[in-house]
Length: 391
Image 1: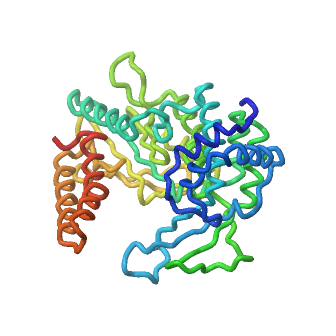
Image 2: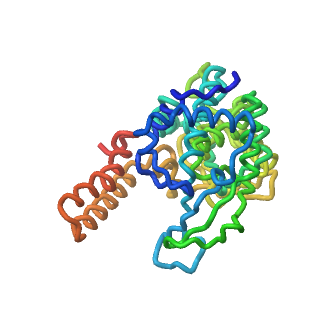
Image 3: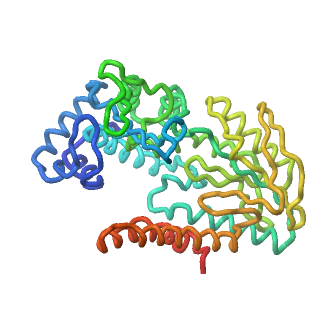
């Protein structure tokens, strides 16, 4: 990777992409003001370059505020809270610039696997993996073929990647050494302050250190996480296993969307090989599989075959789906392909429930329109335009 030289144009581009009023961290600064006061871009570029060269940042910029948002009325169970971390705007601007340079390096050298759809620029999100999956399901049904598939889910994926592996993967893919050293020093300083109902629960001198995972809210988070799992793509693609749509065609070994992995094989033994590769890699980088959210499907001559769960090389067991069961993958209920009738019923139920809740609320007409456009329609747009399952 070429050395990083930060210019005022880099700062202006990073600020332009950011939302105006997204909640800031300890600096209390919104991107709106950075967009308006363009005269400060040159100063920020110079200071960012100095921080990069010196490989250090003041602790203020590496400290977040984690707001604990309750998921329901039961506020006594810690698992019922959703943590949302707000980082300083200055730190996010800097990491946005570094992220853009790292992505440029990865794209120019074709580092990221094509199987990973999570952080691919110009991609269509989940539409591509869902379409590939739907085609495989139709081919299996129509041609009465055998298929073994597995859905793999990582337990707290973004929060469990060891820092040692995060630094190692930057080295493996030849990210600029100055950037590597800078990010390594920032990781040592990562900490957060807990905040509940607007009140800070952690004393200023007693911050909670982030010892595993990637800082929530960091602009580098998606790319860095996908990069940390990229060697698994290489191992799976090099296994020689997978499902072949037609004779002489390319084998599809797996689909990846961020941390959601689906494996394909033509037989149970081949699927076992892919599962063992996945488990060995995960064990090597100290990441755990969420076995309660993993599942396996065996199809023989176009029909689901009932069988017992699989015990892997690691001390875990994965359940096997029956013909009547489905697995929710990328928002779609699946068995052999997508359960279209079930998805249509589910979409209708959610749509009418949300619409009824908005119409029965005490919101004004204008705010009801905003709620419809911001809460109800995005759900339908995902189903209609991302995959087109509802027709």
